[in-house]
Length: 112
Length: 349
Image (cartoon, each protein chain N blue to C red):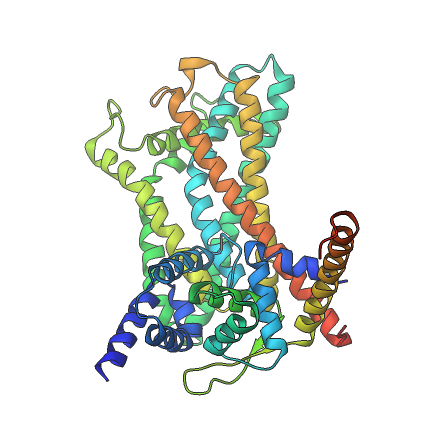
């Protein structure tokens, strides 16, 4: 059985950035620069090029994304079914944490 | 126009931080990406540092001793190659330590219990380590010969020549070993030499010869030994370089020769085995050294006990690197196996 923990924890400190990349690709195929711009737009996070390509290589070798035929020099990437499954599992787990945290903040601190 | 040429040149320059396999796969898109970033933000030192750092990480991965970004086949070959190089260097020390331990045991045969267990483990692990190295060399040589027959050996010529040259040099440096072994096996004055029905004495004789051979090799560029001709000293001093060259040449060949698929799959097992053997040897030697081994100045009569500790730390580092690499590879293979299984279900949450 594969869990999101197995694959994303293996990415170490880059797991957060990996979720951003997977989330971006969930919206459609993108090449490196378009991916960075998309992440900047929805998460206000800039992924530097060195980190991005290391991540793309790792995600691809884990079968979470796949590269498509290059369009001149730009090569688009696509989320695989496995990648979508891993992302969905991860986001569900995060949602649970967010809901619990918000409920407790509301209950004890009248916040959120 | 000149700006775009400049940007391309800058991007190509930054690409040099990465290994050549990475260039082939990501080079074009990476340069394209950087050109767009340069157009938007011409100067960004953080970006330059990020590329340099990730490039160095990619280079370490390229050696197969870290969490690799390559596909598992290439990763296996790189890890086996680098492990081979490291273990080849370590093997001289390992054999030297083994011969020291067995030699000591041999002279203290009336206190057999702790030493016998220790020397037994040391003998088995050192022997297996040596056998795995020889098996890798044989597998590479057979594959190279096959490829030469098929006339697909253009990329193998350089490393093959280096391997053959350094291998010949190592054999030349050890040229007197068969003679010395023969002295042990055929004792003069009509007495029988080694009693092969008593493997202990055979191992002790082999250890004596190994000690004579390797002790001159582990005293790297330190004190000169009395009575050793200068030509032999030069050979001894050049020997570590020859072993390194042989290791690198075999590592390159391991990456370039065509192996059957099954050998790719057992790559991680080989790396893990080398690491475990070296680790087991070190732990046993350390225990023997502290509990039943020689004391103080008797150890390593030429280099002194300090050298032993340095060598032990060096070997431990190699063992940790190799074990880590083997574990990473095994994890990757397991992961790929899982993907293969779950892909067939095509399940998406």
